[in-house]
Image (cartoon, rainbow, N blue to C red):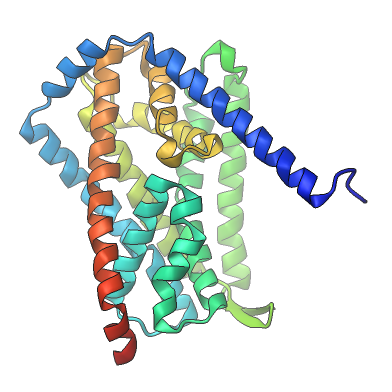
Length: 315
């Protein structure tokens, strides 16, 4: 079927639609920001003691180690010989650049740059990146599916999404997760040809490792937020909100979901926790899980760039 628009016109339409969507998100975030007492937020921020923040960083360590291990799945699948510590540095650096700067900066092109000095074929790099992305979200599916199917959050009426829709989405995510495991059990280990390259499909054992790493990552993130929130808000209350905020952040196309994640937490937990304290906790969470690891990722990137030639020559 022939499209009624040329490729250039269609590309322009998509850019305008994205700009309009980002403008709408920005307006929503700014309008809600005007309703918050920022003096109280500052008071809540300074009330965090060193013990609380230090424990938050400790809770972030399993997530950081998990994301640093994502590319090891690709190393196993492709059989390349880069040392494991260097692969973990590349995986960690690529993950946190993508998390903080968005897919356009920290995504495909950036990850290619990290791997290209070692002479890996482009298709091999693509497979590594693809498996890393699948690994990151493989644990999200069963967690989000479970919490949405059995304990969906109460969304504001203005969002137009009821609990029945959320439960249906939850069961769909669980079905997709189960389907991936079944597919790996049936076809895992076989090879397929794609664009002149041979790709080996993950076995069910590899799928289990992927899901395990991802679950560790997401559960660790939820533990950070639950620890920082005041009162008796449990991890089980935080996880449904975290699952919704993750998708909202991606749909918004805003790097790191800045403002959007905060908006979701305020909208869904604002009736249980004072908004200033809630927002302060989410901001500290950003420092612990986004900004501090990103600073390490910048240092890691500088190290990788400085030592790439020496390691490539030695391989």
